[in-house]
Length: 380
Image 1 (tube, rainbow, N blue to C red):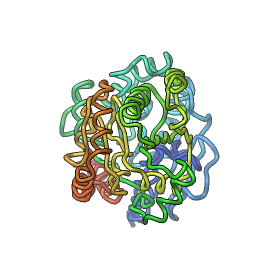
Image 2 (image 1 turned 180 degrees about the vertical axis):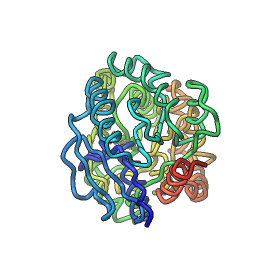
Image 3 (image 1 turned 135 degrees about the vertical axis):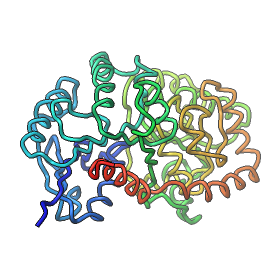
C-alpha cells in the first residue's frame, strides 16, 4: 500500500472574523482543495490558536507553531526556525505558502503564492524593518520555490521582471468573489440606504485606508463632484485604517462636504455584500494592485465601477468599467459625473460585467492552484 501524500500549508492568515485579501484567498482556495482531495493529508501550520471553522475536512491536521508571526523578527523566527524545523522533521511532499513567504532552511519542495510586489514600487509605504525583510528575502524565496502562483498576468510580468523568474515557473491564479456578493432587490437597497446613507444614493469604496489605496484623491474627487453638481449623493468608505492614514483624515476634515462621507470601518461579510450591492457605483482608484478583489465583488453585484488604468486593474475590469488615471483628481471626478449624468452608460457597463465576471470564481482559483501544486507533486 503506497504512502499517502502530505502537503503542509502556511495558514497563519486564517484568523476568525479577519479574513482580508490573503486570508480570503487562503480560505476559499484551501476549503475547496482539501475537500476535493481526501487522498491527501493537509497539515495546516498556524501561528496561534485556530478556529474550528478552518478545519475544512477530516484530512486537515492543524499544527500550531510558536511564535505569532506579526513582526519582521518574528517572521524570521516562525519561517526559518519553527516552520523549517517542522518541515525537516515531518518531511511533507510539498510546502504551500499562500502569502508569498517561503522557508530557506529546508529542501522540501515549495509552492508560493506571491500576490504582488507593491513594496518594490512603493518602498516608503512600509516600515523600515518590513522593507528590509522583503527586499532581502522575497527574491530568495522566489528563487528557491519550485513554482510560483500569482493572481494576475500583471503580477506575473512584475515577478519575472523584478526577480528574473522564468516565465514557465509562474502560474496565474485569479481571485474570485464570495457568494454573498450578488445583486439584491430594491427593498434591500432601500433598507441599506436608510441604515448607512440617510436614504440617499451613495458611491462605495471597499479596502484598507493606506496611501497606496489613494483614498485621499478619492475624497478630493468626490468633493469636486459634489461642488459641481450639488447632488445629495454620499460616499461610503468601508475598511480598516491600515497604515499612515493621517493624510486621509486631514483631507476629510478639510472637506466642505465631509458630512456626506461615512467611514464605516470593518463590517461583516454579509453586511458588506449588501452595502456593495446597494451602491450607485463602486470607486476603486488604487495606485497599485496585484489583483483588486473589490472590482470582482462589485461586478458580481452588478454595480458599475470606476477604477484605475494602471497595474492589474484594467486586466481585471476589462471593458466593464470606467478606467481613470488615479493621480488625476479631475479624471476621477469626471468619471463620477458621467455615472451621475448618464444612466445608459451605467446600464451598458453592467451588461459587460455579466460577461467579464465569468473569468473569476473561487472554484477556478482552487482548480488552478491545485494544478500548480500537482506540477510539483508529479515533478512535471
